[in-house]
Figure 1 (tube, rainbow, N blue to C red):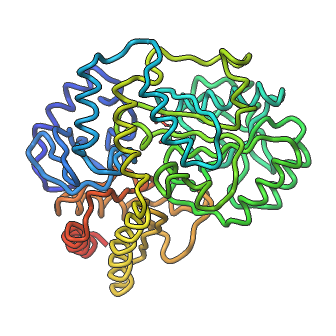
Figure 2: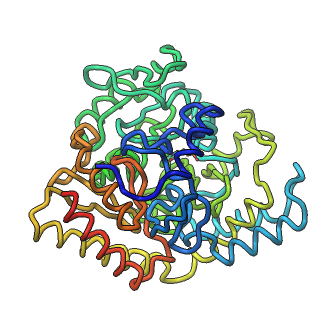
Length: 432
Ligand SMILES: Cc1ncc(COP(=O)(O)O)c(C=O)c1O
């Protein structure tokens, strides 16, 4: 069942784009491969709304995959960008704006003492892995199946067979020899975790995890698992790396580290930190960050790192996030929305529930079970595809993949959520 919305302009643009870009896109999930039809080419966004090139209007819950926690074209972010741009777009020299954003972050975060800005989440992770290796003098990295850390070579690796496996590359072009430097474990398995540290702790530089895994559904971990990981990392001199590209500034200003009150050794950020412009960052203690060039021997650099326009957008956005009550309010509205939809699904007996934390939510087609491991997700995406298309018909836009999460922004007021809830009910009743 494909959506009935008008799509001729998007279809024409997609045909043209396919002649220029692999699959017609500059990032694969945008191609709508798992939901049928041409991707919607977006033209404009404001508050909760987006409009596509055919003039369709949607209430947006994708939020550019997470960065837009204040909604589209937030006035404060817009004005900050315009005024920074007025002074010139880039200098390749330090600006006061970098320190202003750093101060805002570091003075409201108990877990990192120094930070380095880069231009994407992937770049942040890549740099942080190098830093961990440089700091510990060890080479292996432990990751968890189902966590995504950007398209860094050594992270495009999935579990081989057996326990505590050496990874095998999950993308062409990643040498096996590199994949073998990554160990892959299932999430939420304390016994396998202990065994892996026992066998390999001496050679692992860092253990990287999305403390709130949100790239393969929303695989909320038991706190005991995260605490055990913290404990083992300390015991074996392994750096605990929280990849908070999604959860950072999303579930709280201090991200998942703050939410769980678990101190990582290295943290990576992206998405929200740049106010919708390309910014990533990694941070750690002064001691660990002291290894980074030019203070230390771990090289890392970037022509557009700390770009003033992007810094201005990040400052404007994070100044809103840091205000008292911001996150409580986000969560309260998200729960209002999610509870309404879950009650409806339950009353109708749909094999469907919405999982949520902070202002993140995931449409799970696994009945009422709590899923904590990627291997347990229902691989049949028929239900998602039907719901996605029915939602488009109702004027609701979510990310075009059943493995992706949705986001509630500050612009999603209760009044707007009430409208969205009715639209969701209609879509669910048609699709499920
Ligand atoms: C947890 C996590 N790490 C890293 C990345 C990569 O970030 P980027 O797409 O900005 O390179 C993502 C992107 O979704 C992510 O969710």
